[in-house]
Amino acid sequence: MAGDGEEVYVAAIDQGTTSTRFIIYDRHAKPVASHQLEFKQHYPEAGWVEHDPMEITETVKVCMAKAVDKATADGCNINAGLKAIGITNQRETTVMWSKSTGRPLYNAIVWMDARTSPICRRLENELSGGRSHFVETYAVKDAVRTGDALFGTIDTWLIWNLTGGVNGGQHVTDCSNASRTMLMNLKTLDWDKPTLDTLGIPAEVLPKIISNSEKIGVVATGCPLAGVPISGCLGDQHAAMLGQLCQKGEAKSTYGTGAFILLNTGEEVTQSSHGLLSTIAYKLGPTTPTNYALEGSIAIAGAAVQWLRDSLGIIRTAAEIEALAETVQDSGGVYFVPAFNGLFAPWWRDDARGICIGITRFTNKGHIARAVLESMCFQVNDVLSSMHKDAGEAGEVKSAEGEFLLRVDGGATINNLLMQIQADLLGRPVVRPADIETTALGAAYAAGLAAGVWTKEQVFSGLHKENMTVFRPKLDEAHRKKRADSWFKAVSRSFDLADLSL
Image 1 (cartoon, rainbow, N blue to C red):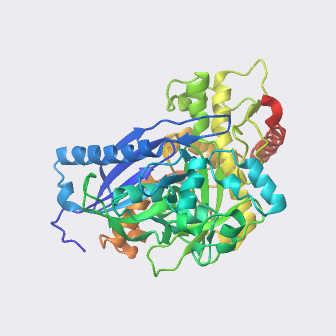
Image 2 (cartoon, rainbow, N blue to C red):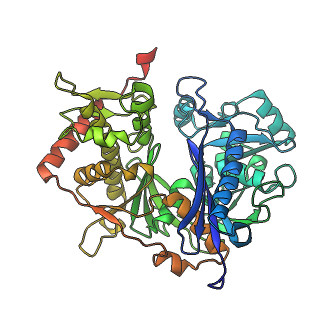
Image 3 (cartoon, rainbow, N blue to C red):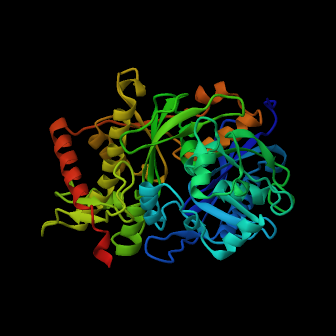
């Protein structure tokens, strides 16, 4: 442990779906500086979403340099005091690149991209072959054949580049990101050979799987903060779970572009029969036990607010939705189902499309705005309901008052109305931490643990416990039940609409 007089910092790269951030924390896990940049979204065809991996790498380096400049201007000696960097990233977004040139062989395919739906449906029926369908272009095929191709999720791509790239970059991924490829065996934490064989994926292109908290490598010369160890790596939702200090039986919901709900199920894998995924929660060191989780992913949460802003022009900034939604008492019987690219958990309907129903002459834009906020909360409820069915009463930890608390984080949680609607429609208290950016904080915790800045006991005893805001439900049970039934009716109306665009 560092001496009290010494300046000690830990930083986190938070590489998300629409933006990249670099945050520097002090020894008390308080942020001292940060920088954020948005980057371009590419939509080559309907349902396709891509990113330029080179642009992502560039945004990371710029954010690192700018955050250090800000901290230095505030009198912090980051170059001397920075002990470790953690990485957290958008999950399931994949990149293939050339080992020899360091250039991507194709754009990154983003997690919400729906182009492989027909393949997935066919594999469900056949579960054989499918070999050529997982290769994007002839350039990729050629690189795989010659042994020049490397595959990875965004964490892998960034680590490889930051630790040297073509000059000896580390080709690794952590177990949380690996679990999201559906190619890893959850119990052995290694690539699952039968799955690779079935899908025709050569093991040589895959990165080595490591834990979430261990020294991975050091930042290479030529990058900002050269020589600083990278010692933590988690997919964004796992990082948020660690940032929220979720232990067995505790759940969190992160509201970002999508929404992601995870329930820590402890050291045993819990299989879902209600449309959820069994996944890794976190593994805080090579020899520590693995914590598992049940997860439900919602494709469109904050993205629906962006749609109101960018596509409809109903609001000028995302923050305006709260005031607009507060101009009405309720949604006036309007229900909005944001199935822009189908519905994720627990429905898994790629044939669903977005609908807005219950519109009358009385409906105004305030009702639409409120229905958009409610759509996020109803979707979270659907996932939590499935989790409770899978994990049972034993699978949730209750507060001293005997209540199940939902921990929340992410940019959208700054919206107090959204949080109150969530508590009302859920019928359970919703707890928001003082620092809502728990994704980056979780990556910093993992890196700081491996670097010896903090102990596990310090982190989980609430190293960063601040005044939390608790939103308690105000809606009575009869109204809550009626709203839930109406939501279910709306969701069912969104099914089987994919052919409308033809």
